[in-house]
Image (tube, rainbow, N blue to C red):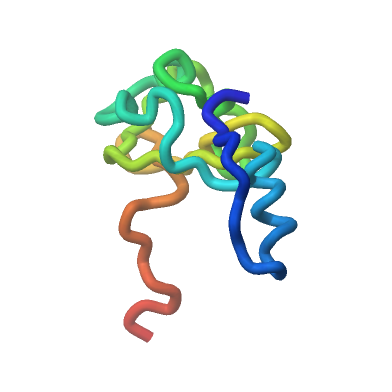
Length: 113
């Protein structure tokens, strides 16, 4: 697995199991990882996999993204480690594009209610 830190995780006792899993690369979000700076603009799934340490690109609820699928990164990509693989989850967007499921500025839950 590329990009995981070897530094020990320091946290409160109630969070130590999750921190240990993230430090071991089993589970957790990746913010800085090899190639993250290159993931800007619109790229194909194949380009995302080639340019970065991301192992898989998935479409939420649909499985693996087609290698030719275009992903509008919005300059913000937050893949997750799942069992030692770095996985970017995407969702369909306007214009036949995919976008990362996690956005830089998420809509607050129950906004304007």
